[in-house]
Every structure is written in C-alpha cells, then in structure tokens.
Image (cartoon, rainbow, N blue to C red; front, side, top):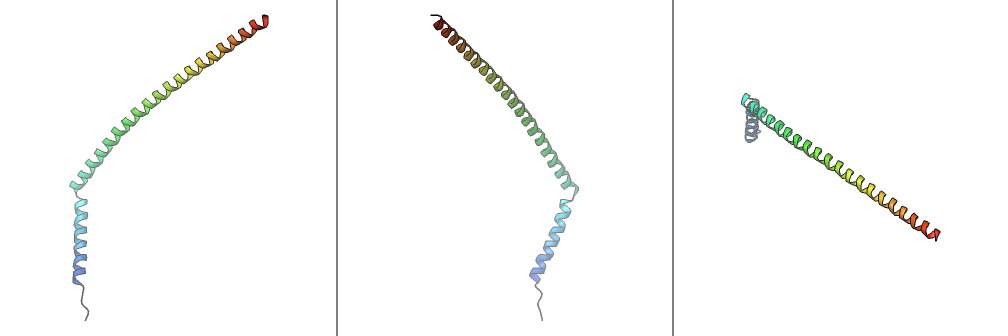
Length: 99
C-alpha cells in the first residue's frame, strides 16, 4: 500500500490558495489605484528629469557657441599678428636692399 505524501500535497494546496488570493489582491480596485498613483508619480519624475536635461543641453550649447567664438577671435588675432610680422620683415628687407 502506498502512502500519499500529505505534507507535499498540503504545501501544494497552500501554494495554490496563496497564489489565488494573491491574484485577487493584486487585481483589486485598491491595488489598481495604487498602481495608477505610482505610475503617475513616475511620469511626473520623468517630466522633471527631462526639463533638467533640456536646461543642461541648452547651457552646453551656449558654452560651445561661446568657446567657438573665442577660438575664432584668437585665430583672427594670430593671423593679424603673422601678417603684421611679415609686413615688418618685408619693410626691413626693402630698407636693407636700398642701402
């Protein structure tokens, strides 16, 4: 005569009962309200983060634009200095050739 494993059957029955009750609890109106409120909070947080990201991105664009302008001014000043040096050198060699 075989003996039924009552302990294992009891655990199985308890698991089924607990699972069924859990599904009922998770599917209840109160649980749905909780999920809805949590989702709304996550969406508000996302909007806040996206506003911050947009502000940072705009500031980075301003910084990049200013940096490019500074470099363009520096290149123009260096070019003018090279031209002035070349003009002085040309004037100096012309005076030496005349003498």
